[in-house]
Image 1 (cartoon, helix red, strand yellow):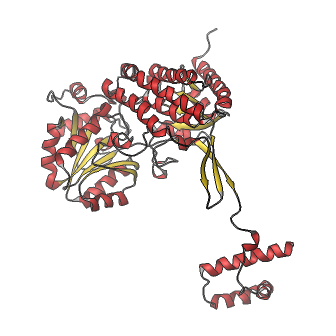
Image 2: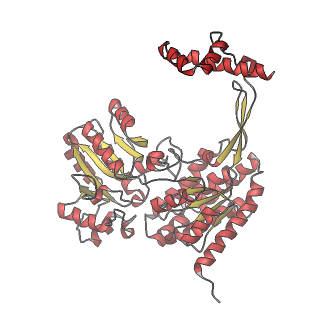
Amino acid sequence: MELDRDLLSMQEARNLVCAAQKAQEIIKNFSKEQIDRVIDFMRQAGETNAAKLAMMAVSETGMGNYEDKCLKNYFASHHVYEFIKDMKTIGVINEDKKQHMVEIAEPVGIIVGIVPTTNPTSTVIYKSMIALKARNAIVFSPHPSAIKCTHEAAKLMNQAAVAAGAPEGVIGCMSTVSMQATNELMKHPDTKLILATGGSGLVKTAYSSGKPALGVGPGNVPAFVERSARLDRAAEQIIIGKTFDNGTICASEQAIVAEECIADELIELLKRNGAYFLEAEEVQKVAKAVILPTGGMSPQYVGKDAKFIASQLGITVPADTRCLVAPLQGVGPQYPLSHEKLTTVLGFYRVRDWQEGCDRCIELLESGGIGHSLVIHSENKEIIREFAMRKPVFRILVNTPSSLGGVGATTGLAPSFTLGCGTWGGSSVSENVTPLHLINVKRVAWPVREPAELTIPNYIEPAGIAAMAQNPVSRQSEMSASPALSPDMIRDIVEQVVRRVHSCKN
């Protein structure tokens, strides 16, 4: 009798966690030298197979483009490795001589990695490397639309790790995928942490699984262009950022907000870089096709190039078109293209000045990108600082493509494909996730003071305390008329009480 597919997937999930648990018991005892060898082998495998995995991802998902996925895979292998290779994740990682304390790193244990269809192979390379750098086994749950390429990436990473001395099963991946199996992975007793990248529904499921989880939120990144910006560079950087891998990175630009005084010039420069500005009726046509009535994006157009979208909708565009730009007047359900669009479509807003631009950016973020990222093109340091202070995001990127700056490719941010949005965006972290988020830290603490040093001042009278206990109402009225105690006096009172307790015990 043929077994039910969901039952098969759940059994596979249990088998993978079982294998990962055996591997975890071994790898948790690896030395720094052993781990360094493992992740170096993984780096080499990622670099060598970057093109192969890129081709598989584009062929299977139909999202993004081959060249950019090659770069993403190489970035996840080479640049992530260079950033993490010298991190202290094993044994003593810090010694504070002043506070007489030593910090020791321990692995968190088995990690479940949720993989999105937009970045199916680069995410696997990145998560595998940061997991093993922290001495953790990891099991992946692919998106149903990217099973083959995700599984192949995990297999290559596991083979490289094992060749370097890691235990078999240290990196596993589902081949029969179902929501039940993913839940089984997340809720399994041996799973210790969930590293979730994907749709908001799946990320919420990870957070509600009862296990610790590191997840991300939607982007909806505004790109504000201020009058002092180098407009030619700003136009070029925005189009590069939005069209990189056909807009599949959650940190990619979603709307341009431009000051009125430079808007017309910016539009001409954007056109020179491949932007096609939609007419009013074309805006409605694109909005209806790309954005679902629920506010989410139609999977049919995720990661597609601009000319494909235009051809599907009967819109004639120039041969060099790289991005469709929709002039908009507001934000919200009545303006569907003001939402996050993981494809080659941008919104465009005109504002009177930077203050109005600031308000418009906040509107866009609050409609579905709070906590994530914002990019500003400006040479005015004061305005950049104002944006940084006022915006409800944790990545403020300056004069760079947002998609590449957010993941740390063109900025000094940690190279990462898991970008935390903090509590504002429903995430448990506000930074780019690294191996340091995948370790436990235990602390050995020596005394920095003796109990006898915990003294209190002489002006505390034991007799007065006893009197207050006998006649609390009278004593409280006296205290209310007394001058307020300073913080130093309160500390001294507490110290005196502690000293009296110790003396009573002796």
